[in-house]
Length: 455
Image (cartoon, rainbow, N blue to C red):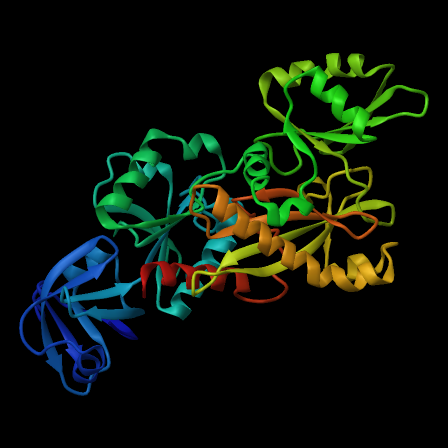
């Protein structure tokens, strides 16, 4: 199979028939396309048998207006191309689809709300790498067949009918949207019919992750004791074992709904809950009274109970670390970035949504009371741990993931702990851009899509 990037241009349909394309002589030779006979032009789910008309001294592929409308091409664009002699197929792309939760046509400047900047960044990264991306919502899947109504950016956001993509990235932000019958039917249909690759295909719940990873002896040392909270007896057992325990909603995110339970000197128990404005604290004379108070919450959601950890602190505020681990252009896991998150004043969770702040790993450990040896090893050991966890998730959880947000903690002795794994790492506009036009994480995503599509 021969590969290269080629410019694609449209010409008036009167000049060129819909079942013919014009291709430069030099490109025909480089792609090793035979001189005679038709070939199949493929772009996402689009297929069209075409005759190739050689053009001397041209470095582009020219197609008719009518053919371009069926593919969503307009103007001039650069696309990767590969030719497979076995099935006489000229493939262009990859065509990448991103499934997002919502669209707002009334806001042409921000049709996807807080992730619009990411969508624009991904569009630019695709242009640079010879790929093409569009964005679509579950609503576009009702009655969808071989084409989808998707958003593209070309001097502004606009909607087009486009083929089903070679690769789909699931950026849905709610389980309700992800579990819609139309979404699940679409995913199973395009995988079987078109061989579409679909990654980050599902949310992870906290208990599922820890139950699965316990089977991997190589990462046991990172796992705090965690269980699905079954009742008062389990709470009593964990509180007898640890001075602090956390109750975390199995399907929660952004630090919402987390409860911290700690023993008090007088024999009672203190319950701390995270709220948008700070931490709410209530004391109870006994664990039974505390359990009675939180029982209504336990009836409406499942909770994970987890060993409390004496996390490293900066200015008396707990610090944890978020690693973004992604598949690269060869399909291997790598750590793209890792940042320290320090909890905001009056908070015990470090999420940015709760007033947390970001810094580099070295800055955070430098301000801590860790030993000199732990400070030195942390920037090396944290990425190693994140990578080991990502590989374990892939090995023990049956789903396709292309990127994971992995939250790690360092305790005050310098030991690394796994706190959480997130299959939908944030792409909001408040994610720091560091002044870089296209973040490495976005470039990496396109490279992985190209790997999956073989383009």
